[in-house]
Image (cartoon, rainbow, N blue to C red):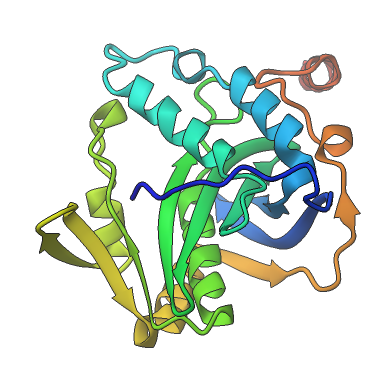
Length: 244
């Protein structure tokens, strides 16, 4: 759903990203971590640079069609544009020191949050981060609980990159679908479902909340190279030598 964004003023206090939790997934007996960071005004330069470095077509090199990739890219840009805005909470998902997803939440009223934008992407060509979307949605449910919301809502994106619609994703998460006269199809969830749905997605990962985390400069701890670094190439080469 589109909502008015307010750019931070020059007097906006400068903070840095704060880690809010870690999800540990287990795919084919291999454990992976997805870290979540809450972004604030000082993260605007990093977020903008991140957006400029994400090449969705390069990250999906073997598709026969890139239909709706422009709209997918726009979802990422609009989520990045929310960073530092007063009424938005923006959360970044990270795996292996690379951003892999972003979500912006708009607080429309004291008891109502809107999932404004959500998008995920691979951290390397053809290397999808499993359950990144579910981890971000888990954070939305926790946000709604912490805000004592009565309900949350969203308008599903109309684009279908890779021939996939997000509607099925929201259905599996338990959202109710309502036709509205102004916004068309809208997804809604009441407060009685927040904790239950958060527990439901925890079937896919173990979540550890970060308590009293220190602010960090993402520019110093993350890479925006969505390909193997020199260090990773060397490590892979040495592993190959050992196998031979």
